[in-house]
Amino acid sequence: MSHLLDSILCGSVLLLAVVVLINAPRVNVKANKWFAAFMFCFFLVCLQNVLLTNGLLNENDKAFELLAISNFVLAPLFYLSVSFYVKPVITFRFNHYLHFVFAAFVLIITLISFRLDAGDYPDESPTGAAENIFNSLFSIQVTVYCLLAAWKIIKYQRGLLQHRSVLETIDLNWLKHISIGVLIMSLFWTADIVFQLSEHYPAVDIATSLVYLSGTFYIANYWLKQKEVFPYSAEEKKEINTIIDEPTATNRKDLLTDDKLATLKAELLELLDNEKPYIDADLNLIKLAEMLKVSAHILSYVINAGFNENFYQLINRYRVEEAKRLIPDPKMAHLSLLGIGFEVGFNSKSVFNSTFKKVTGLTPSAYKASHANKKES
Image 1 (cartoon, rainbow, N blue to C red):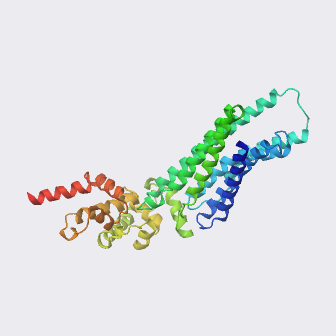
Image 2: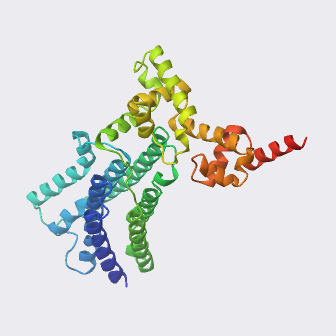
């Protein structure tokens, strides 16, 4: 049973790697190439187990030892794929190669062992000790890279506040779920390596294979749900990248003089009051910068330094103020509270309610009731 599950898993992972590489939707192209490399590496890990359990290779074969190096490439590839997903512009540099230093070290040690070819060792304790050391290092590597990938996603979420007014459609939930799937599979894999459960308990071996297979389908399901993370032009992506890397005005003190800052702040206030661009649910920093005829980088600075807010806070505060004006307006009586929320630019009931309460201290319904009471009195 376990052998069959391992073979199905191996084939499923290879199929997913090919699907990701083809990337029919043509979204997040660079990131998906890295993710395809990660899935192909995962396939090589699964292939080791299939070859081993079917007696096609044994642990002392050179081919098997070379295949085993893929274990140490797997975690860095996942981390790099996440990095490419969450950054609008990223160039592969020398420091990225450092993620593969440990795998290169293992490869060198393996090749040296081939060269020496000392034959069979009567005393296997040194080999066992070395195996335990490498297994421990591998377990640490997988855990650290999963945590680093999670940190990257959290950092991305914070960066969204600098250039988006609506977060629900671009919150990378699909990537979060993929990361959860990878983390759960990694935990099972690490536990199996450390405690060698599969070797002693056949039921655990079957359960672990089922977890890996389920995890693969889970990852495939959420990968298919992805959309373009940064739907901007190449030049706009560079600006957004700069804004994300320098998220606060304190990091850009000399960007504008005080007089220029005051002038642009006044122009922005006039634009917001007269044209009400915030009622556009798809408004982002790039669009607003074009309306103000400045770069997105400059506009971000004006918002941070001039209002002590980020883009998300500023736009949604204006939306709440507009909603406050519309709620007691008799001309808006035909609209529900949710309808008014949509009218002013929100596209989610929960976000409208929570943002409204954060700004006013009241829910929209409580605010409406308070105005109704004032009229009666």
